[in-house]
Length: 77
Image (cartoon, rainbow, N blue to C red; front, side):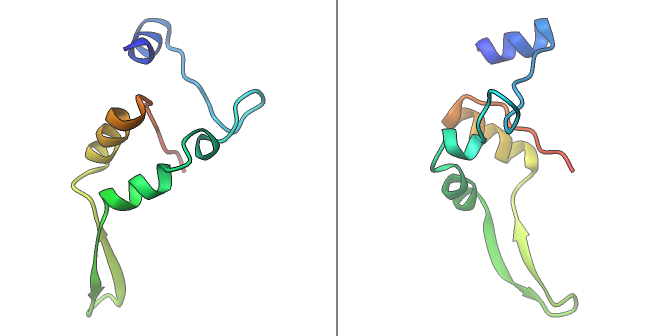
């Protein structure tokens, strides 16, 4: 709730891996395990020769992480 208010009212976002904020992986030690449990792995596509990794949508993953950790996690490239 507080994080929603900070984001919506004050346009405030906590940026991890910046001075004063450690990596989110240090804060939530089981984060990668939780993400891995949320992803369905399947066999490689014979035409593409690549492993297929499926999640329902990124939004579903973000919602699952918000429920477990009460954090809004955003990825950027």
